[in-house]
Length: 236
Image (cartoon, rainbow, N blue to C red):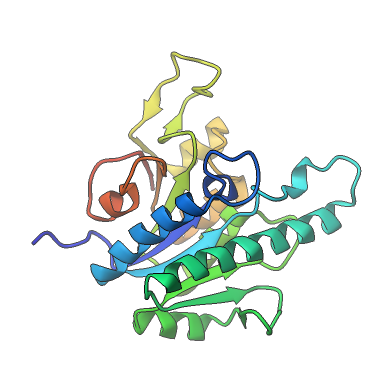
């Protein structure tokens, strides 16, 4: 039987991916499908950590008049909602899961402690990192890069909604946009491709963490990527 390409992964799921076809909030069918794929990884003995976004509820940087720090903290709380929903879906499938938050809220989740997170992973538990880095002005992409470096993950899986990789321009606006199969971080930074913010890209570059950007809509893509299928765009 073919073995997974990676032993420990950080799966970054955007908030938009969790809303499915809805315009806002959570789509239970979509969440259950993602949870089923994560369970599939666990059954392959892959250690899975997850970073969730919050854009299906609130995107801090899109607020024009609100204080930026306040808006960002609201976005962090939105990621906690998503983390708890994903935890619930996983546990209904008998997948042991822990949510760790960068902002302490002990009644509903553990505080983020790196050693504890690693120990959970070693014991076969899925760990969901919520509330970003706990600091305003940092995106959840940067959180994924930071947590991947801290727990020594093999790869970041950047699961996107509505796009299946990295293009030289917006494929929604330009039908002739060209998709990249591979890119290096220098190109991502220099060409300003918008796949992730520059802080996250620099963190991954400095720590030599590869990223695979792929579409989440197609069934079982998360498992396919971990098994080595050539899907999406690889950044390294």
